[in-house]
Length: 459
Image 1: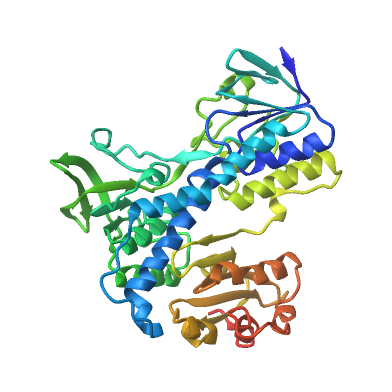
Image 2: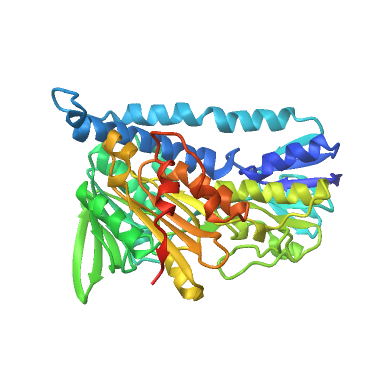
């Protein structure tokens, strides 16, 4: 039995940072990783996908928009997918390698490579070793959900992970799922040159967003040639020669969609099913997530769950915030809670969507009196200068407190501009603080104060 002051299972966004804090405080800790140091973000999520999206953006500008800037490319624009993948690999490589090196060199930290499994409330087996601690932190992340579609087990398919090994251009990529992961891949591969069809069961894309946002995203994807099929149920899939055939039903009519490759992007599931949680008495919900309290503690004293596996965010930034909350509570005597944070995230299509707080639909459902301001990106001078005028900005304000309730910024730099709104929301300051701020010209951000001058009652 090997005893430690803490055991960290998994090296996603929260795990390594927590390991460094605990080690710096003089703790003797064990870190267990069974496969990829750095977790989803560094290996199959944020970093590689945004690198691919950057290559797709370059291809799109060269092929479709160079002449708009007075630039004559000349000849046919082609995409070398092997070079695209090589660039992605070069960008991604240093991160997981650096995390692994830093943990193995960290004083007071012992790294175990292998599959971790609980054998008791404070005991974890990895290989032949059994580790013991009265503080265990689970940071095991998640993976693509594979739905129970008839025939899927007989058909080759891709997920966000296996897409990272693709170094060729799929002739026709069929994407199951019209949300964040699916749409980012759909637009990127359309820009690389694939035919792309997106199949979504719901009545519209990205259903958690307001209808105007969903429609705007659908519009610009369709303008680029992505075939969007909403309100469409997948009945079965099968292989026919070199093709993949997806049988669907929409509006009572059954049809088939024939493609070359199939990407599953309908959701994620936590990597908790093979951890032996029952042996520790750690509860999970019906989807496999580990319920936690406001300080990320599980139902078992001395066991915490951070990152995607706790179902409290499923973003890299929420996982990092999980680490900050745990470290503050354990080491700093600084009470911090999950409910202190404001929902914020981005969709990295082009243009991107920056989101914070409540949607318009949620504000309406709350019944509170509210104000709303909108501005088309076509009215933003910086967007016109860049030739990127698709989308709009929308901000919602509580009519009584004057505090910002939420924002949807769909447009160039929306994923960056959203932070000036987030910061004011965290400060619990009235919108007038932002309205009266002097921003730099020419930027997209400078138009947020201007937009707030035109707040109107939400009707």
